[in-house]
Length: 372
Ligand SMILES: Cc1ncc(COP(=O)(O)O)c(C=O)c1O
Image 1: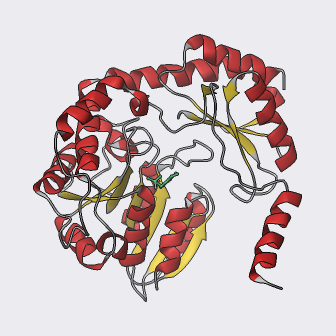
Image 2: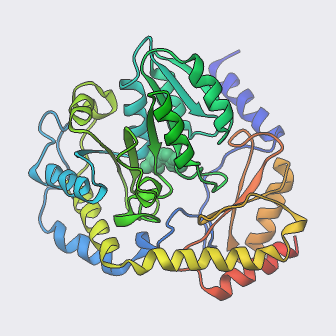
């Protein structure tokens, strides 16, 4: 079989299973799908501030941070974030994918153990795959299962969790987890991707809102979701950041973000910290959705969530595609999530709420869901 035939066979299998991925654009539909929870990606004032502050900076960084790509601006931005996140230091990456790949591939060594929640994001799993440490997954948010695995763990032990899980919108039981980790002297690494900006002082996520940020070993903050821009940062101790600069290949062997990206990060956090009402506004949208959805909830399998991500299970790739099509005919951009992105039988529509979704839009969406 030629290579092209092999590729075509793989695609055909996807077509048969109704889970072929395709690029698409929304074209005038009401956004209930992007991760732009606080509307900062489309915020004109922020956009102007970024353009104004970018002035006549270079267009690109010209190299890796370890070569020509480092600037005072990059280091100042990292110090600024460390102040906001109350960590010794931070290190900025091109994306959350890269940040997770860096942490999990570089930190745990042969003879160590990584325990990770089974619903961890692909980039956490990919980073873990690159590590020589022993790796075991534990049942989603199941502290008894984690405890059983901690008992058998050897070497330095790392626990990988997300503050909020991207496909379900449910939260990790961080208080309990930290207590358990401390009992076994394990180090917690928390991916705050979906809580960056959305909750916590200075947008510092779940760990800061629970005052547990000093109890976890490292935090990964991403800027492409609630912050409305691009990039990510790892927050941790000075020694850990220096270690990443020396050993994390996704940091070393890549072109540094452009100066414009550092400006965007700084301005986006400045905007957020001067608009504390954004977090209240998104909390209000979530409360409205939950109250109204409650009335029709018995028709669906619904994952309880206090986050902008609201997952409504519609098992079957074909069924969930039809549901999403119906919602788009009604004017809403709500995307289907197929298996294998989620477990077979737990296919879903993933609704993302935003500060810019009006009360009427949310009520109309609920009406459309009721008519599915
Ligand atoms: C939990 C989690 N971590 C990391 C990432 C990757 O972040 P980025 O989009 O910045 O690469 C995502 C993105 O979907 C995510 O959901």
